[in-house]
Image (cartoon, rainbow, N blue to C red):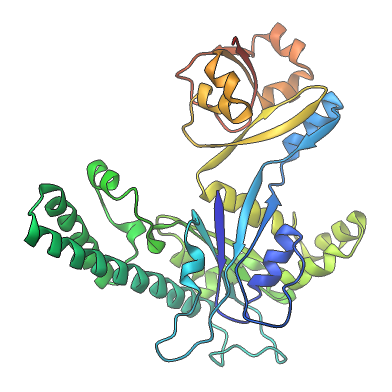
Length: 358
């Protein structure tokens, strides 16, 4: 699953990308290109299981991020490299909340809500252009052959065109299951879920909740398909240079319960509709990524196709029950281990051992 990081120039999105993924800084020369890297999803459950089982290794879930270059603002110019967003499943939109005399805002003033709306409109207009092009082709096809499939698709695209012309993103349009099915091969930018990340200065990050409320971002992100988070890329960069103990002391001084990067990664993961089930043993403790609603055999297939093919049962215990009992054996004595069949929908935090035969 891939997440595109977008934003206007001078908002700190490339810095955030580097901090999230550990990727090196981009070369200073030449035209900026999209960059791809992977971030681990912080999960204290993996750490706790590793303490219990003492495995040879532990493995976290991951999120794939694409750093999408911004485009210089100008008449008729896009504000983001739209082709670079092809294939992404969600968007992280970094908006600027910090002031800086050395790095002035391109529009002359810092207004996070204005910038959020500006780039959202860019995505809507890009989708409108795509919808209009498709409608032109459908009209031509209908004149030639008048296929019922083309007529039905035209009706859907006309509905989408009206929605977009009202400057409303496609993530807010109401479509029937049949209409969604007909559109499954298309990728529209304004239908993708968005995590708004406010990049703040040190004074603002001390009370980020107040900034998100005051700036209007909290109300703006209360719509379907949105998430909201805050971070200070400058502070996170400073903490990355410190020992874990000193970094914690720094966070405590700022009143931060956890690194802002952890919160951004976890929120991105959830926004993609993903969850983690866990496996634990002497060889490895690991978080496995699946889509919400995945049934047990398909979840088994993320480990190995043979396990899915030969699936018999899933031996399941919740992470919380396992931690309370102290061992799997104790869970079996307490009756908190369940045997689940093919129709079981795996839940976040399930610790699973799959029984299979091939």
